Image (cartoon, rainbow, N blue to C red; front, side):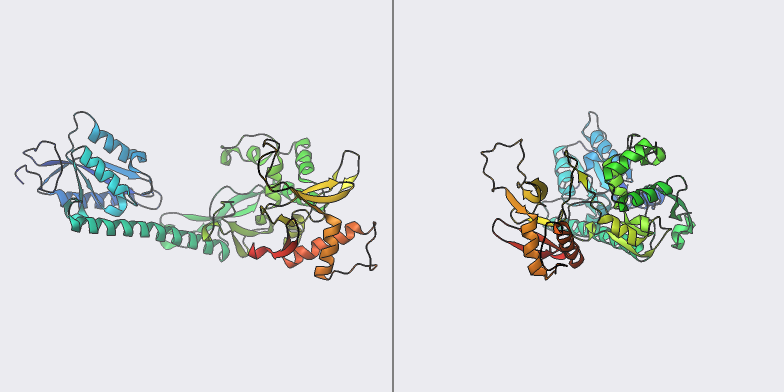
Length: 440
C-alpha cells in the first residue's frame, strides 16, 4: 500500500511507511469448555491473514470467559484496548477483529465503529475483507446480516443449553451443579457420559445424605407434620444449637453470614422437593414467563430420599394454628385460597367479631395517606362464603345443617375440596367465582 490507507477510511492519523499498526481483538466465552490457546490462535490467524500487506499487529487483546453481551467498555481486555487507543501517544492506527460473532452482538458494532471514527482509526473485519465503511451500501447490508446472525446464535445457544439442562434433570435425574441442599453432600457418580467431556477429566456428581445434617431435615418434616409452625421449628433448632446451613458448610456458603436459623431457611427446606429423592432444576422465582422460568422435576428418584413423597405433600398443606393474645386458637381454613378480584392479591386472614374473615386493602398500608384514591377494602366472612361454596360444589354436611360446633369442620371440608380440584376463589365486591390454578 506504500503507506497509504484505503479510500474508505475516515482516519485522520498520519500514514506510516511500514503500513498500519493494528491492535488485534478476540474473545472466547468460556475457559472451562474451550481451549483459550487454540481459540485465540485461529482468531489471530484470521486477523494476520487479513492485514497481511497492509501493516502489522503491534498489540493483542483477548477476553477469555467474557460473554459477548457485555459491552466493550466492561470487558477487561476490550476496555484496555479502548484506553490504549484513546490515550496520549497511541501507536494504534486500526483495530482488527478475528471474527464478528466473537466480538459483537446487538448494536455493539455500530457503537464501536462510531467511537473509532471519533478517534480517527479504522475497524477491520474478515467478513468485509478490510476496513469497514458504513457509507458503503454493501457494507451496511452485510453488517445488518452479521448482527442478525450473531443475535440468532445467542438465542439458539441459550435455548439449546436450557433445553438440554431441562432434559438432563427430568429424564436423567442428573445433578446440574450448585450448592447441595442442607441434609445432602456431593459424592462421585462416575465419568461424564459425553466421551469428549470424559477425556477432559469431567466427572458426574450426585447427592447423598449427609450423616451430620440429614437427621435434622427429617426432624423438621416430622415437626411440621405434627402441626408446628415454621417459627417454632426454627426456634427449637436454635435452642438445641443445631448449626444452620451457612455454619454447617461455610466453604460453600461464603456469601452468607454464619448466624442462626431464620424462618425463611426452614420454610425453603420444607418446600424443597429434592428431599423426596427427585432431582430439581430452575426452582428460583424469576417473575418471568416462558421455558426459562419453568421448574424441572425428575420423573423418577435420582438420589436417596430423606422424606416420602406422601409426607412431603402433606407437609405443604399444613397450616399451623397460632394462639392469640387471649390464649384462644384462631384458625383460618381458607387461608391462601381466596384472591382479590380487583388487585389479584391473596386476601389476608383477619379475625373480626369473634369469627374468621378475610380482607384485602389492595396494597394500601399505613405509610400511605388515607385520602389517596384506592378501591374500598374488601371484607369476606368465612362462614358466609363456605355456605355458598357448599351449594356450588355440592358438599354435604354430616348432619345436613351447619352448627357452631361443625363450623371448622365444614370450612376444612370445603378447603380440602378446593385443593383437591385445583381451584381457588376469586372475590369481588359483589360476587365471587371459582378459578382453576392452571388458568391463573
